[in-house]
Image 1 (tube, rainbow, N blue to C red):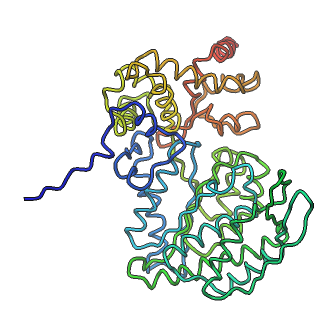
Image 2: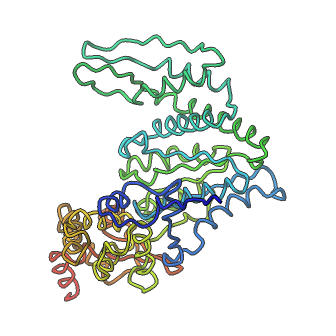
Image 3: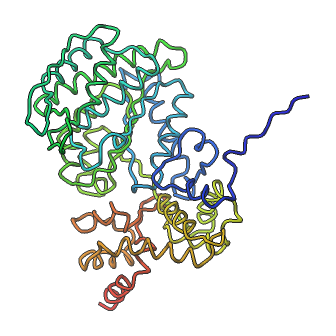
Length: 449
């Protein structure tokens, strides 16, 4: 008689070091960890069925009874670290199950957020999409690939400490190696001209003048891939493009460039698409322009978990306890970490990891939890000044008013102000900020006026 050995690789760990690694705040859940550690907090966020709602927005556009060739367009926003990437990975799985070929692009995998201008956005989407199509053996638009290769060959330059010179890159690549050659060329470049360090050689290009041409080729590649996908039994509904990372664009100038100046192109990509949007842009006067450009009624917001409620606190505890054995935390210490995270999942992971790093006795007590919270509070204190504290004090009393001006929007983007929902959005100062003595002084002063 044979028995199947139970796989405990993802069971809650009792090892402090392993628990610390599992609480990495920089790694959204995907793959096997997503299957074992994910906790559905949508109800406690005030956004029950969030991912199913996004999925249905794509499905309804594919309904055969729809008139014309309807394109599903979904915009998603929320704080950095609130769990959007994990939810988008769940959406990827749900759409795949329903017969879609999903191309998931993570912009900040290859480019830092402060470099995400229009040309890098197009290049990164094109490059990652081609990598996925190649890996899954889906045909691409050969004519578009040749045109893209020629475009890059036209602009590429080699920079060394000795100077700059042209690199002769042939666009005439054999059919069998065309895609591989293009990906190799794109991988070698940086996407913009920059100074090289001593002894290094870097391929760079400046192709802003041709970004429109490049965009047309990207659309051709996606359309061809979508048609090819529909011929497969596993993906009869064609291609869905999910692009994560747009929400990391902090600069207002870059937000305007990508979503306003370049928004028509992104909206016009002839495949179903799901894109993230910075929360500071959504809460600004530019919100309506974005919705009109993309043809959506609203941006779907993923709020923070309401850890002030018993149900929300229970869910937040479960997020940690799916990964870490309960014996690693005193009950009150874990509750403190959950409450002081404000329901922001990344901050919850940050606090848990910081507390575990100090757990010299093998488990987290109130002492370690307090030290972790103080560290998070200091990370806010180092950049908050008088104008910011004055602004924050206003939101302690008026939580239904969104921050919409030049002081409030950066506070929202940086999670000093958190967004929640009870059918309608409301806002609250992050608990780690509220405990700062400076904030208390400004709050008391505001209350006395």
